[in-house]
Image 1 (cartoon, rainbow, N blue to C red):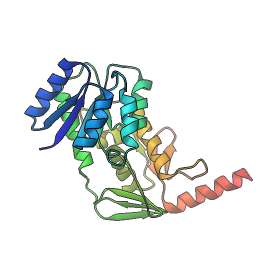
Image 2 (cartoon, one colour):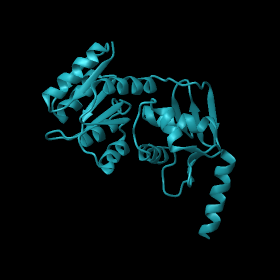
Image 3 (cartoon, rainbow, N blue to C red):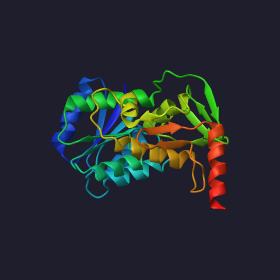
Length: 244
């Protein structure tokens, strides 16, 4: 039985989430503040964290930042709960490494569906197998691991899912809507910048440093594509020539 950690300072919301998740077959543990959330995440090693953004003391953003910096919890899938409706507020959580978000008030059935969808991604649901080498990157679809020049890169489940879609077909542009449809389920009503936030994280992790040639490029007016090794080299040469 998979354990879900639900963190919210509103007891009524915690109870509703617990009731529906337990009916769906999950074990549920709860916390009412950020520090307790961090402690339980480290001690219990849950399969997924449902995390309120507005918490007393240590808020959800600080909790996410702390967990992503800890080797024991950096891959823990996180779904954020937020009453904030501004796009910028939601993007901050995604850019810190949250896998998904749900705005309050929410449907308990939607929460269960989102939990199941994120767990499927984190457990390795993919149609690809084998290993792909592109430049310095090695992508192992079966082990769900990515290495750059032999060094392991830690990705969230959503980041890996996006990378897998793009890397399976190097050179093919994908619209944001296509990426959303493939990574999330059909009922997802998110916004295009959800993809932008995850792509920003991927670029930072795959190609660190301002001077690095990106392997995921923007196709203006369309979306994103993964460039093949030769194109990466050509782009790098062009960039160097432009600097001279």
